[in-house]
Image 1 (cartoon, one colour):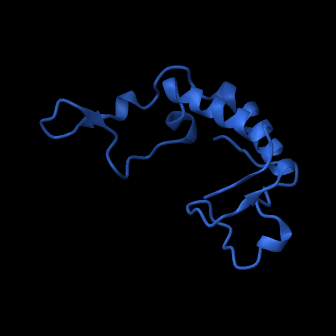
Image 2 (cartoon, rainbow, N blue to C red; image 1 turned 120 degrees about the horizontal axis):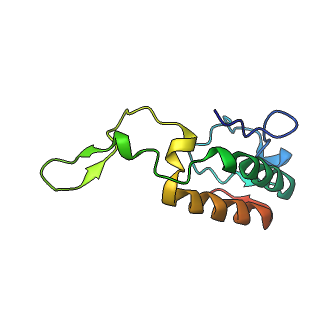
Image 3 (tube, helix red, strand yellow; image 1 turned 180 degrees about the vertical axis):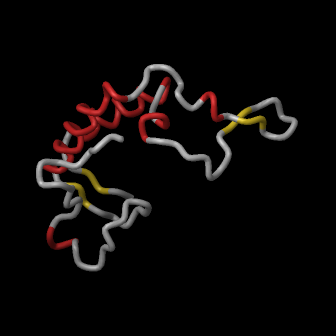
Length: 109
């Protein structure tokens, strides 16, 4: 399992003045501000994890037919790991996000 925590064990993700009222989750876009320092730490952590992400599509074996459409997809509830999810062609998106984080702080909207 990839551990993406920074040297302090986690990412603060919010400037101190914005921390009040935020539950600490990452599944919403509540206008959280990621500081430049935290963005750099996130980029570094993701970069350290890149060698663990397969270059081949590690999810392919979990894909199932979507009805009679001839298309395939991963069924809801199928266990996946971050390494599987970002494997194959999706690894490039991870690289792009690393570059985005290296550019400095940002706001989650």
